[in-house]
Image (cartoon, rainbow, N blue to C red):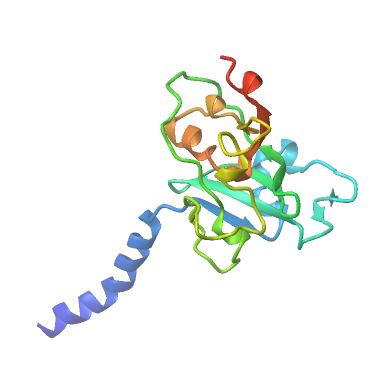
Length: 185
């Protein structure tokens, strides 16, 4: 019995590691563009004067890099402007369009933009909270008077599989877009 107990004691850390590896994560706010550089040509991010130069974010308080991950798969990267509550860019690898339908998924927010120590899983916004650093559903139609839809920077239709398509439904990947342009198929 002592040998079995000792063996279980040694296997417990392995079991915990395996369990943690299957828990899905959604997105992660990171400190450097280098942490998601596989989505850039030659692993080189764009040069955006006064924002992103030589791979360095000049104002770390305003601009945040988000490695957009869904079901344990990082599918694209976004540079997000927390002051204007809009993405500067999203970058992804185009792997071809295999077809498939647009997923039925609710738009989500990035909790780490509000509280850096928060869970790294994207989730639906809490309507009782005022989000200071990101757009929420009430910023888009039918809630706004301007008639703007949520327009994808990395389009869902460019996703090569259901995971990649679903991962695009984060408001950190959305920009205001006139309905008539957004709904043309």
